[in-house]
Image 1 (cartoon, rainbow, N blue to C red):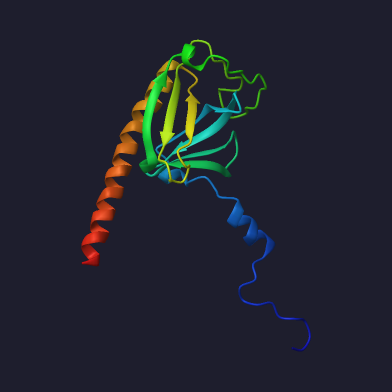
Image 2 (image 1 turned 90 degrees about the vertical axis):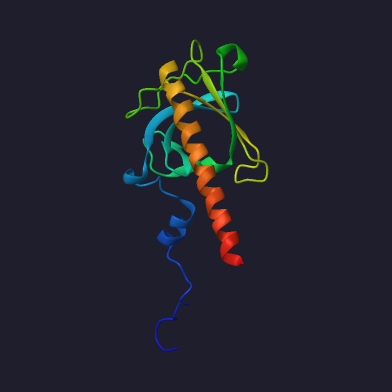
Length: 169
């Protein structure tokens, strides 16, 4: 070595390392739905950006493009709509956190809540999620859209698995 020390080819820059940890939300062309909803976290409704693609539900903080969680649609085992009385004891977050969203302060009264369960042993290890739309109509639309896209994602996964089995023979 002469002059400056040489870095190995596997060395990554700080920006590149951050990219590994900060996963961007899907590109607009892949989004089936991009809206803000309430997500129940630690018994408090939190506003979150919600993006649905063909294969997953993606979450970010409102007005942000960095994914903080996702649910593979093929791993959803059930989706149910709950009445307000089913989610008693849940506090509402009163902070206004929105420039882009219309949710801001999420209220629980009069709104329906979606309960989504995921596959044990899957990406989310059987975790249950609770979502709430701004209106009952929005929540019902989320229910239908998630059910349809989850069913389609499971069918694609089964088809891929069958194809892999056939190719191995």
